[in-house]
Image (cartoon, rainbow, N blue to C red):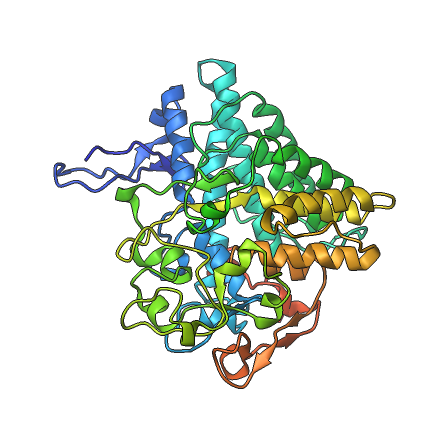
Length: 500
């Protein structure tokens, strides 16, 4: 098996980590997971290796916690904190503390360590951004590498500021503490930029990235092209309430992508070449994550303890809002126990309303490509942003119709107006993006409470209060802001912790 030359940069300036495929053919007598940055950045070949290494870090094991398996693990933690994914049992504990709203307020938990993982990504791309211009070679290639790195830097800070800072208030000063926006490699502890400053820098990086990526044709959807940067720009604008920018960027990002067929829906959202994927990681056979994989927790077919003992369900409240002719309704099984559907392992349990939306490669292979951004989300962003602008409701209905009609051949163009139209779009968003890490951040950006429907017993498509603990959380307040890891605060005198 050949070694894969992917150069992953460490937090320490000037040192590169190189993940390699396993092979018995190689016996090493010197460390092979580190390489001088000067060797990487002395050619475009090295620079391409560095950015390919960053692509790879999207799905590596970050620490000994199985919940830290690639950035899909981050999205999975966040999804568990929302309204629509139901824990049916406490038999398996993975993600339960996140589900119960404990981990994100514990400065020693593995959940808040996404701070470290995201800043590691930032450190990696900063070395690329700050050294690529000096490398000899065609400007178009250097621009393509730099544009991808700038997009990663913007995306990582966008994640950080949503988690570790109070919500962005559209139209407000947003002078509350945000996160340090790292543009250089530094060993000095940095102070927190304001939330407003962070978003200004995010937008500047995305604008520069879009320009740099003009004309770049990527090798596969693991890489970042112009449409990926535009899609992230649309997500950012939606949080800021910049409706015109959100609609414009989402429309631009979705160009050239088609909807998946009904058969492709049933494949389990696990193929990076799915026509709807704007950005998705491609996981090779020799790069499996085993029990760290997203699909080891959210599929119904992989043979893991988490799936056998604790399959996840949708709430009946949301399920009942899906029309009978909608292809997505087939992802969930309201009578799973009686109907013996969907497939589970011979010693696995079933709960009503359990999911089959996500499919691992096989019962013994937890791999699956992960969709970071799908084109369906861009239709929903565009529709919501248009619906919130005066005089653009009809345009919003047209955009919503394109997506909803594809999912449900019997869908009739919406007759709703005002808040009712916005609510319809948001419901479509919850259905479409179920399990993909958007629900909790949507609640926070919209300043909505967490309201989890409850039932006395499991398997009823509702949260069991003794499992969930948190079933009603008012909007706003410190509980919606993650704690910064204690180790980071202890070693950085310029960094203030979020309040209790």
